Length: 257
Image (tube, rainbow, N blue to C red; front, top):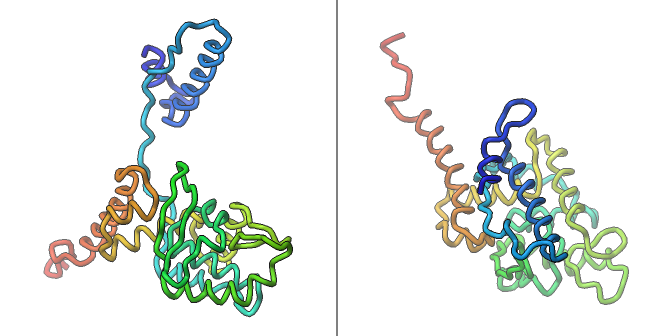
């Protein structure tokens, strides 16, 4: 407990308090060392077991894209080529489902129900499975991709991954991230856009349009509603900006000019 209190008051070389992330890293190192000592028989019990951990602050997403920006990015891939078509489907799936990049990279052909409009996410974050809706327009793209584009990428019989790389095997998460970076840059979007940006943007846009937060929590695969509620703070900021712009009491007094 004293160590935890000391960390809370410890200052960095610049004279600023330790960040929560730095505190957690130090506590993790201490806990690992205690477990080692316990395993070696130097300790009878683990003194770090009940050491309280500081909570990470819930931060607003860095880059929320506007719907117009998303549309611009989705229009960038050259769909007359196999690579462009594949990339367009990747972007559409990311924005439609708010899946994480690892989840998209791990998708198998059988995980997509294009007829029913669902994606089955196997062992998402925390090892949990979930089912996520897939928009009808994206389902149509997936059907075309599977029927006429994906076969051009296959290099080995029995390859089941939905999205393939140039060697005909499943893409890794970093390759999925590269697709997003590439087309965001081509679209001239001056924001730090990433796969998580599309995830954040999907959630925010759905909330703006009235999506119930409980259902959104299930779609995003959040274990806690508190994690999902960070998006309500984004929409509240939107409302504040709208209020300042349109409320009559917030407008300049014409008579005062």
